[in-house]
Amino acid sequence: MKYIIAIIGLLVVFGLAYIVSNNRKNIRIKPIITMIIIQLILSALLLNTTAGLELIKVFAGAFGKLLEYAGAGVSFVFGGIANKGESPFFLNVLLPIVFISVLIGIFQYLKLLPLIMKVIGILLSKVNGMGKLESYNAVASAMIGQSEVFITVKKQLGLLPANRLYTLCASAMSTVSMSIVGAYMTMIEPRYVVTALVLNLFGGFIIASIINPYTVKPEEDLLEIQDLEKQSFFEMLGEYILDGFKVAVIVGAMLIGFVALMAAINNIFEMIFGISFQEILGYIFAPIALMMGVPLSEVVKAGGIMATKLVTNEFVAMMDLAKVENTLSPRTLGIISVFLVSFANFSSIGIIAGAVKSLNEKKGNVVAKFGLKLLYGATLVSVLSAVIVSVVL
Image (cartoon, rainbow, N blue to C red; front, side, top):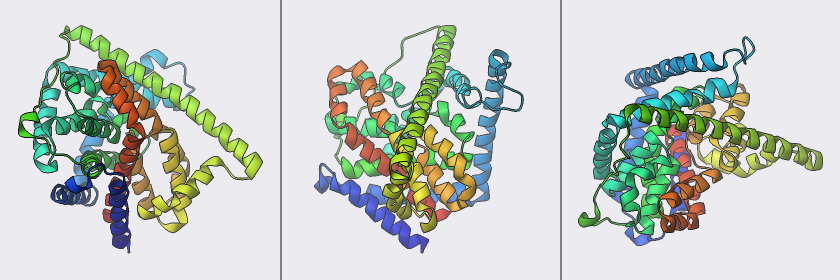
């Protein structure tokens, strides 16, 4: 039965993407089928094999060790603030982002990260049927972040037509940056975080291939990465430390605002209608949760968490998931966890449009115009990844 539901889910996702496609005649089926098969194989390997689980254990262990190191710095500065036995979210989940940001900066400075991103990007372009620039951008977004990635392709932004720019922005919204992967792993199971990272990379190209199909001519398929301003090693360290802290503070501020707002809205709806706003959203998103393979008895609860992620952000949704995880089946927990690992929410539209606009005002205005379509596509990527995972769970 789960296979039938998964097939229906795939058809619905493809159908929803096809409806808004800007060039239906140019959709290429072969790369899409190839990437779906790759997604199924990778999800099965990561979640259902000993080798895959060991690989995830190593990956999670490495991040666990990094979080320990980060904890030493956090404890030194804030050690006396927390009561004994308590685990403040800002200190234990958000502030370690600073240390992860520093490591990314070091690998950038040593030019190891750009090399890895470029090589993987070129290899991906052989599979997805898109340009090298699009493939590089997807990998880079997953490593250095959805706004920072555009700095590395600054020279080419002004030359890109709207369709290629859409793909670049869609990749940035569909993935998550390595700087906050560690934070996710403290909130949901690491194996689902890793699986989602891999699936979303291909899912972004699958959905973009339907919504926004095009062919890149050989003479246009150039990959020119912008060299960042030359800094000394310690200048770079200072910059990445501050960048990491800014991310932690911004996420913290957004959580305070969104969690408080959701609590207020829920309370108002309960007083007026006798049902919370999130429960209403849960009923609206229930059919999507059912299509993703969530059991019928849990679709409303799962739908509410999915909707929360869309209207707020993934951190708020992960916190809500943690509150009810004991009432959900392992299957539902896995499907929803994979769905949550992406930047597909309304606030990301502003972040991406703002990042592009800061580098090229004209192209930033173009991105703002297709912002809702960008979110629509990125949400379909999350649904697609969840459907793929439902097959192997």
